Length: 114
Image (spheres, rainbow, N blue to C red):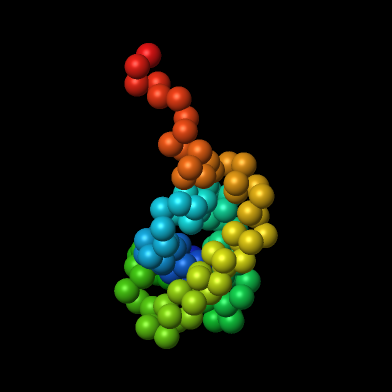
């Protein structure tokens, strides 16, 4: 029987990121965290602020998010919201250079006419 160490917190955070981001507007929140580096920074933020007890031994099976308790999910959701705000504040200039603003997106020349 093969055993492996699995960080259940990380898997739960990754599964919760999408549902939390769905509650935010597409621009700039969902666009910003569609960038893999920022999404990973968000996951790392939550992991660094989440109190311990997340490593478990799994035996020959995949973990699914339903195995976690509601209190842990709520704590992770709260940290995701905090992390989203903090990362956007810290990386605002970088994000504005990598994601066009809504006003700029409408002002781009159309490629539709060739």
